[in-house]
Amino acid sequence: MEKLTSCPLCGEINFIPFLQSNDFFLTQEEYTIVSCSSCGMKFVNPRPEPGEIGKYYESPEYVSHDTGKKNSLNFLYKRLRKISIERKYNLVKKHARGKKLLDVGCGTGEFLFFCEKKGFKVTGIEPGEKPRSFAQLEYKLNVEAEGYLDQMVPQQFDVITMWHVLEHIHPLHERIDIILDIMKHDGTLIIAVPNCDSWDARYYGKFWAAYDLPRHLYHFSQETMKTLAQKHKLIIDEIIPMKLDAFYISLLSEKYSRGKQNFFRAFVNGVRSNSFANKSNNNYSSLIYVMKRGKWLQ
Image (tube, rainbow, N blue to C red; front, top):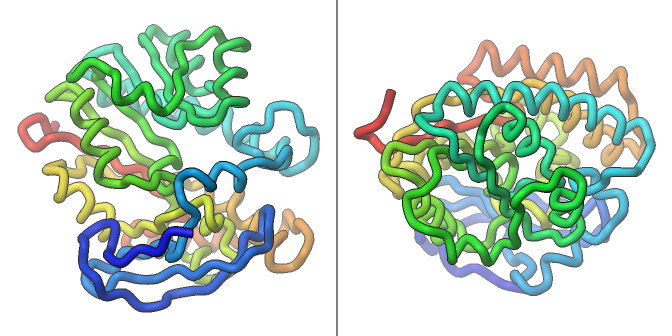
């Protein structure tokens, strides 16, 4: 286990315990989330080292990488994913100044495949061998392992997307630096992350599924995402809600907190979460941040 002595966002050395929770998905191991006393960043500490984190993804139930499992939760996930992919494409199309797209953490490649059919020249990065192979074989996509990021030509991509990926990455600032190096000066960086200030996060507490310990190393709020953007000289052009996430996350959280799925309760709490966010500061269950260099802000 790796114990951090400074905040991964701002570098300060003082932080306090925020929450203790478990890996409800796989191992049931307990972890501590701490909060930085300076910037408010919440992160797992101690956390698995980069060389050992892979074992926490090794399950046929891990829905992000599961293409064949047939159950109600997986069916719902795939239905929501289909809707989400078209919305993501429309956002990319809106902000793209060109047609070169990189998706970091592309999983099994459905989003990239959709964008390719719409005329984008796409590349994917996926650390998991199983989903990467699926994207290559099923969709014939150009998807590379994580290490390929270091070999890419600078300033080549018009849009770089990270859909629920940033919270998984150990070298936070280093990865953003690499991404900005290979993004064109007038390019757009789109990052989606769960929002730990959402109503459903507060309602479910330690059972909130989007904590997803220890796979999610960081737990972002709007304020900490703004701090991240500022540190890399980026300006947030838009903050867009992912309203469907409230329902899916509530469904998983119901399972973790009560031991079984409850579609009706999850639906009600999804509605409550989105209603709360609509009335107070845009704090939806997950948020998309559209970032650009200041000169190119539209």
